[in-house]
Length: 203
Ligand code: GAR
Image 1 (cartoon, helix red, strand yellow):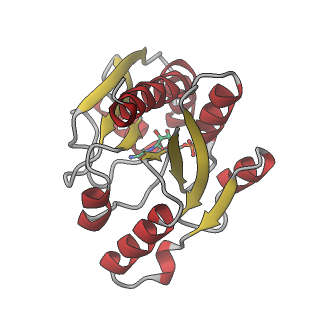
Image 2: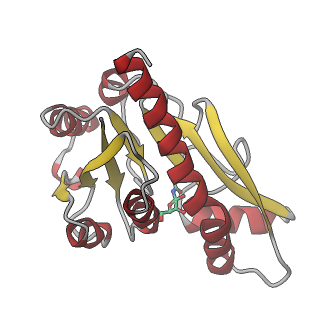
């Protein structure tokens, strides 16, 4: 059984999509064991608690040195035997210690078609604002593996979503979530669970 941790910073609609997918049997060989938030106000924590999942805060603000924050995150994950880490609207950039502890075992969802509108500074509504400012007619979402380059790891899944006349960052964000993110992320987690479970049992 692949032990999954979901890292969050905000509302947690992607976390909710994972919780719902798990309840519907989408991860037969995986289980969400932990939700870790980078700030105590993240509504995602409520979603985790409502689903009976352990929810903890490792506050980014409490650590001056990013390397110390990374160590605290690794400690929280490893002490629970976590195998797979899912960044679902996690807005802190994780450093080498975390990436080295979980090589090819950290997934991120990004709300654009990478390599457009991605990298440092592109998060949440800013991504959709940038897409609207540029005037693209199609955007979407990407699930990728995490390496040391922000939004630079291997792409696993992508889905395109139309930009419509009159879109605001908020309407576009909602459409990208509904049509792409909430579908892609559970799909990618199921895929990785299959791979990791197969590797550990020799299937
Ligand atoms: C999502 O749109 C996610 O793709 C994005 O933040 C939002 C979080 O929403 N992530 C990034 O921009 C990462 N660069 P949620 O908390 O409701 O899942």
